Length: 246
Image (tube, rainbow, N blue to C red; front, top):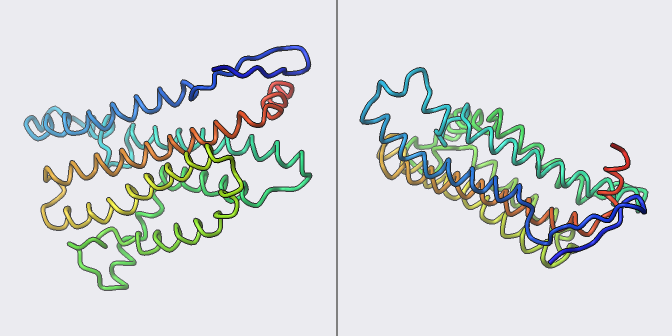
């Protein structure tokens, strides 16, 4: 199915109604990273010398901050944030004011992008664990979730009217994407804290948990991006203005 949109009053552009191919590429790359993780982990365990100066960690370690999977997630969040920004600019020009809902969404996406790249939330773990005398082997081992859970709930309540105002198809993609992302980022993070504290970071079950956690986060952001792409199709003038400006 294709939708025709006239840009600049001259050029007729056909937009494929299927998800943009960039999301297919992102999902393929993410799936490759997730599936490659246990393979390279097994190679490293069997042949420690193969790792060299962190080569395998940089290439595929889902649990490492300085790695290709982390870079992929940062780029993914940046793209999603830019799509939301284009939509928000188009709405602002129509209404002559900044839409609060879109402002919060864009701010959240770019904040997540910087946090993913710089790991600000990881810096909360030790101070919170020490301040609250938390067990190093429990589900709150990664103590940042104590802040993350109320923050996520508060943001969800704040954005509820905005999300309800969106097209049903867009709303379903966003809700499902956020749910999957939070299940991985917070729910499985707590499971991982328990496993790591009990069995250790090199255990098979911890590797499985990391794969599931990071996979949920990546796939969740992809679904959020898909929802925003659907919304972007409802704002053809935004694409027109982008092409005219360039």
